[in-house]
Each structure stands twice: as structure tokens, then as C-alpha cells.
Length: 314
Image 1 (cartoon, helix red, strand yellow):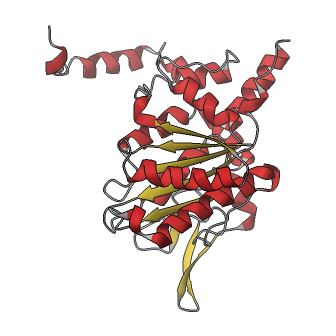
Image 2: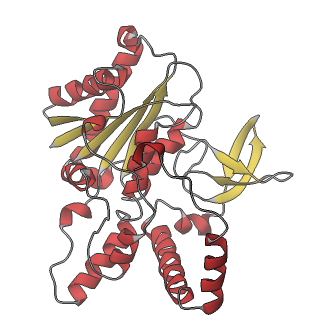
């Protein structure tokens, strides 16, 4: 069994240290461990070119226009049995580097679309997608913050697991953690997170959430978008819609059980989303041939030119 730790913080800073704390605990339980300081790897921004999603739905394979280390990083994640991500908290949320990982992860690594690709390849008489990309996996997240501004980071982090539909085991954050290595309670909690990940990875088919119950009974998310003037809300993580009600002095999120198949972290929900993407991509491709569409694009493109980058100016 292998546990992979990813740190998105500064070299040998608190994120690196706490990631290694959890990895040490995993190693003590017999796991093989590997550590990656993500800043050492060449990970470029997603440009939104949609080459990945188009290639998947057309059965052409896993394609990305960016030529960097991300494909190899994803292979490392796919080959591990459990993944731990430790990330600094920036303005209550995940770091910029972490968001780049999220952008690069989906939709080109969405499990629903990868199943679609696997099926199309086999229909063409070709070998299907490498099984490692389709296997279940356990993943945990920890945010390390220097203050108590942290309430959005759990949702930010769990989004990384959304595309491949990996099971989130723990998703936590440590506030006031500039000296976290000296805070024994947090160090021990980090060790427990490492142990939990090993236990989940041993039987990944039955892996489950091992943290405190969240407000959303489906995904354990705690962040919601509330429609103004109503009790109607949407879980910002799994996308289920429902209502927030006060029960026994506490907010309770309720959704219709028959809607649970629409959750963004389920295969059924991903299929619905994949069908939407396929339909919209087809519609857009047809629009490219439409004279009115071309005229509007040409008009607005002519309004102004982008200011060139000073560092790239010739």
C-alpha cells in the first residue's frame, strides 16, 4: 500500500512539516510513503481550451494542451492507494497553487467522462483506459492557517476530489498555526489523519468519511449558498438543493431523497453533468458555423486589443 503526500506550501515550512508528520504515522502502520513538494514541479495554469473534455467525449484519449508535469503528477496520485494534500490557507480558502491543481484535474480527469472514454475506446476495438485511472481512492485534506480566517477552505479542498470521485476521509484545517509543530494536539491530530488514511486505503471500496459530521448529510460540507429572502439553499460542495431549517436550536440541511442521485460527487450526478457538457459542446461547435455568431464575435473582438505583458514585450 502506498500513501502519497502533497504539500502546496513553502519548502520545509509548516505544510511540508505537517504532511511529513502524517506520512510518518502512515509509515509506522506499514505503508510505503512518498512526498512531493508541489512547487518543485512544473504545473501550468489551465487555459480553458477544453481540449481535455472534447478529447474524452470524442474517444481520443486523455489530452491536455499544456506540456508540463501535471500528467506525471496525476499518475503519481492515480498509482497511490491514498493521497494526502496539505495546503496553506489564503484569505479563508485554498492557495493559488492548489486551485491550479483543481482546474487541471477537471473535467479532463472527471470519472464520469473517463468512463465515457473507456467505453468509446472499447467500442472502437481499442484497449480501454488504464484501470489505474478508474480505481477508487481515499484522499484527505488539511489546511494550515496563520489566523482564524479559514471557513471556506474545506469546500475549496474537497473540490479536488470531486472530479475523480475519490472518497474524502478527513478534511480539516488548523487555525493559528504559525508554530504548529509545537502544538502537540495538532501534531497528534495530524498523525491520526495519516492513520485514518491508511485504514481507509486498506479497504477503499468501503472507505468512508472519518471526520466530524458536516452540515450536509450527503457530503459533510459546511458551506451553502442561500437564496436571499428564502430558506432555499445549495450545498456548495455536492450541489444538492434543499432548505435550511432550525431543528432543536440548530440549522439542519434537508433535501429530497429522490434528488440525491444528482449530487456532483456521484457517478449518476456526473453522468448528468457529462451529458450536459456533451450537449453544450455540440451546440457550441454548431454555433461556430453560424453567421450571426461570427459577426458578434468579430464585433466585440474589434472593440479593443489586450494590453501586452510588459515582461514579454519585444
